[in-house]
Image: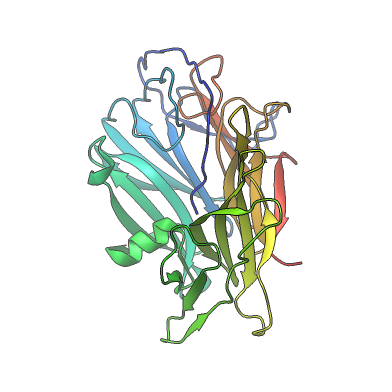
Length: 343
């Protein structure tokens, strides 16, 4: 499910890459127990997590830092890397898995599960040989569930694209029924691997305050839950918000959608941002970046396993400019807001 960001003004310093240094994996740092990975040159572009596995992409050399970038985190790099890798680690320990990508940059990472469930972890990678996003391709890697981590199968095509988009998990795929643009009371359908399908109830058509509807803008599946994001507007105050709904598609037919979050909201004169979602079987995590609160300036993205929430810090893709190049992957300690899928 895509997240949306509005930034009034972002001013960053141009910093040369210099000689790229390899990232350093930290297992038990004495001085900083929340540090999962030290990234002094800011080489990590994306993170993903699921089950007990954590994945991140590393480019060499690091990209330059942008100036006055209106959108953050999702745009192509300023310069292409010479090489890129995707690393996968098990929280419980053991050797890391390295996937070589060559002369490509990573646009998207997502951890999911194949039809075999937790015993069949998968990693979707969207990588691009050029800065133009039209050159990007999706690849789905099936992994071993534990040490030693290995790639057992590589898949491309429609299945890999759906996995990268967040619309498939455990072999079950969610898709809209009919048109979605400008419509809120739309329906989604879940297709099972055995050919069965279930059409879900209509999403809520109206909200008392947010009377205008921009339509369905995102949908995703994780475990037994489907998530939908609807764009709504308050015409009186010209206020916009993304409404996130969840439903258990294995529940009886009487089950209805439940609003769980409004992570993105703004008016022409102000805004509140959220990084995420980090989706698990139990719900979604969002990192609030409201300017009135003290939050990490370099935060780019979050990801969640069954036991932890991880935060990617990197000046290159941060919402607010940082003091210096570089970054890290940190274990989030109560910073992310959790919105459970169940009542």
